[in-house]
Length: 293
Ligand code: SF4
Image (tube, rainbow, N blue to C red; front, top):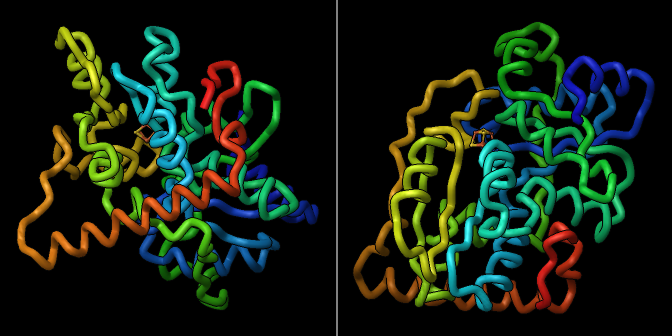
């Protein structure tokens, strides 16, 4: 189970080495994020890492499994939905770490970063995934955006002397998948032309879709429990503004756009080839469900 803001502040005061992972929602919703990061740097946080680019590793793991899968494949980075599906129908759930856990695993195991990770998070439930089934605490602190927004309001005199800071960039994960396309289908569709990609947001809509179809063969479902997805998760303090998702959008027309898409697909293929050479697949999956790849 994760610890919250109060424990994070206490442990920073005690000099505990801590690094921060940042959800996409924090970039969208915290107008003073750069000052907030400067504030945490002053308190001793060693480094800051956006989570979204590390979805490249998550989608590489999905892609690796999807090449062999013919049935329904549920890609979900949603802690709430995963809890629900693990109870009801664990077989269809991809046994892949979320982008958050992929980021923590990569930074700890491949970049050898020391200390604990704190997550600047859209969701209280995210802490349910912090500890792996083997007992490794990949992420320790779950600080929700709502909690932090109340603590560090824009114009807060505590923040004004703090330097404005940007999080680190990492060439190993350039953000060619979810960061570029916004959905699993948008990112992987060109590499897996035989698959149908569906997006569902909201628990009721997702469950109804899962129950309502006879056949889900060759279908990839990307699902979120919150109607607005993680950008408007329960821990953000925001009401949903995002439209309900259905199918992944068809790509736009035009030769230049088609050429750009082809170049992007080639770059993604090269990136995934590199991951296959340099990453250990099992480091990013739940071992109890680990398939043979
Ligand atoms: S969709 Fe909602 S419940 Fe799921 S991880 Fe995001 S914020 Fe949490």
